[in-house]
Image (cartoon, rainbow, N blue to C red; front, side):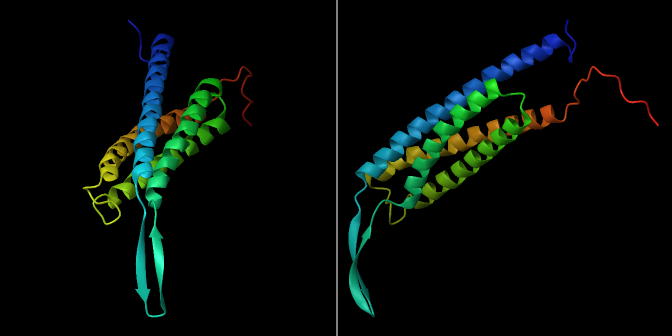
Length: 184
């Protein structure tokens, strides 16, 4: 029987933690590919249109292209590729470095906030004039939005786990082999 703080149980927690971390990162990577594919397809089939604008000072033709939110969601997917690769390498190779731990927390936080902003910005446009629900590109954009929201939830989980890991490991007292100083 192992005690809660025994080396055997700690080794099992670390091994399970690495498996869970790898599984979550793999899901983040897969969902980013899905978002990139669905959002990319929606951008590809979207047809911009020209509108004749009439104003008091003159008339002009205005072109409405792909909404910026769709491009931002594509950026989030590309950012996730780079972020997940960094987080996997940093978690394996540089796990003991405090500075790398803080950078990991920052990368997680930026990805978390990016996905939150990205999927909400795209979701707001579904059903509006820019993206009527009847259009084919808007139907596929719903899938991109759903996977964007799931990606955000994955980053909520991994950000919490990373924050706990980094801040619990930096607060651990170092085990020094020297004797403590004599109190005065």
